[in-house]
Image: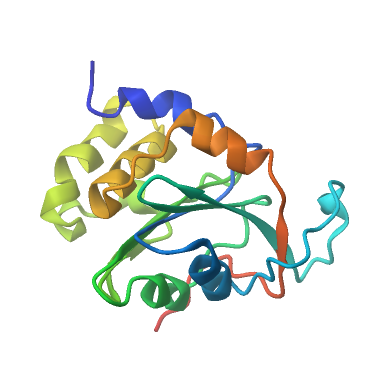
Length: 188
């Protein structure tokens, strides 16, 4: 069994090609604040009717941290959100696969971006942090399942194991509107 095989099941457990945001050691409120979500009001189940400039995240606590899932595939957490939730020695990662075959992986530690690329599956391996290289090299072995590899790399970075049940619980839970969308990460 490959080191990413357990993630193949997890990568198919979300409603769609959503960005998955994992924050180790953070609270649900801290993640919601970083994403710009108001936890006091969830949106209706027919959230496909949101304005084109808005999106929504499901945000749930899991052992070791917080899991947030965006529903459209086009409203990634910004680099600032990654920095914000990782202050004080914490870690976070974002993984995205969408219908346009854009595979983002980004991670931060202690308020600093360690790696971020909107097409991580296709970057020069020398750019990938050493502790993630064995998993990164597995992208080709999985016939393109970059989401599974990204989830495995997120676990290495954050120390948070996201199960298929966690993904399903978040995906089926309440969603909270965010006021702006960030598809391609900012450059700062």
